[in-house]
Image (cartoon, rainbow, N blue to C red):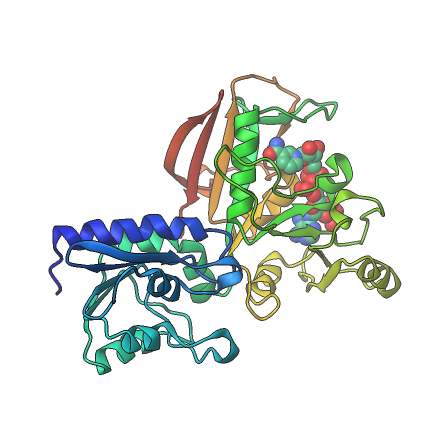
Length: 376
Ligand SMILES: NC(=O)c1ccc[n+]([C@@H]2O[C@H](COP(=O)([O-])OP(=O)(O)OC[C@H]3O[C@@H](n4cnc5c(N)ncnc54)[C@H](OP(=O)(O)O)[C@@H]3O)[C@@H](O)[C@H]2O)c1
C-alpha cells in the first residue's frame, strides 16, 4: 500500500481543482486534471479540453516550463492507453517518452480501451507508479462518466423547483419564475456541466423552453451547449418550438409516423426510436437510457432532467434516477397547487422512495437540496 506525502495530497488536490475546468466541455470524455511537479514546483498543469481532446496529461506536458524528465505526474484518472491514431498518441506513451520519474493516479479507468493498460504501460517502462490517492474525491468528480462506463446508462439528475410546500404551479397552471435569478443561473451552470438536458412533451408544449445555456453565474463563460433531448412519444412537438430551432436537439419517440420524422430531420433535428414497454405501452425509459449511454458511439455520461411531474414520476418509477436537485423557494402555494412528482398514492410507508441528502445550501433567496436516491 502506497504511503502518500503531504505534497502528494496537495498536488492531487490541485489536479482535482484543475480538472473542474473541463467539466461539461470534455463531454463525453471524463474531465481529468493533471499536474506535473519537480523539486516541489509545478512545472505544468492541464485539463481535458473541448470535446475530450487534448487529454489532461498532454496539456500538462505541453504547458511544462522546464524539462519533465524525472518529474512526478499527478493525474485524477489512469492515463490512457488508447491507440488514438489521428487523435494523437496515448497519454501513457507521452509520459514514457517524456521520461517522467513517477506517476500518481487517483483512479483506475474502467473504460474498455484503458482498463489498466495505461498503468501497465507506465510500469513496464520502469516508471514508479502509485494508484489510489484521493480516489474517493476523484470518483465523486467523475461519477457520471464512471456510471455510464460501468452500468451502460448516463447518471441521471432530476432538477426540480418548487415552493417550500413542494408545489410547482398554481392549480390554474401559472408556474414560471417560482425561484429567483440566482437559482435560475445555477440551473444554467448545471446545464453547462451536463452532456444532455431532457424534458417531456408536456413541458415543451406548455413552457416552450429553449434548454440552452445562456445565463451563467459571474465568472463563467458559455463554451458549449449540451444536447437537448425531448421525449415525445407521439411526435406532438410543434414547428416553431424553441427546442426545434438551432439544431442540437434529439427527439426520442415511439411513433411510427415516418413522414413526420423526416420533416423533423429535414429541420436538423435528430430522431431516435425507443422501444415501448409491454405493460403500459409507453416508451421504456430504462431502455431509452441504455440507448443514450451509447448515443453516437461515444455515449452520454450525465443527463439533467428538467421535466414536469409526469415524466419525473415515470423516471422515478423506472428506478433510473440517481440524484435530485431540489430548489425550494421561500413561498407557500397552498393545497390544490401542482406537485413535483405525479407518483401514485402509497399504502405502505416501506414503499416510499428513500433519499440521502448530500448537500444543502442557499442560492440567492432559495434553498438548494441535493439528494441521492438510496440504491436497493
Ligand atoms: N418546477 C419545475 O421544476 C418544472 C420543470 C419543468 C416543468 N414544469 C412544469 O410541468 C408542467 C408540465 O408537466 P407535465 O407532467 O405535463 O410534463 P412532462 O412531465 O414534462 O411531460 C409529460 C409527458 O411525459 C411523457 N411521459 C411520461 N412518462 C413517459 C414514458 N414512460 N414514456 C414516454 N413518455 C412519458 C408523457 O407522455 P404520454 O402522454 O405518452 O404519457 C407526458 O405527455 C408545466 O406546467 C411546466 O411548467 C415544472
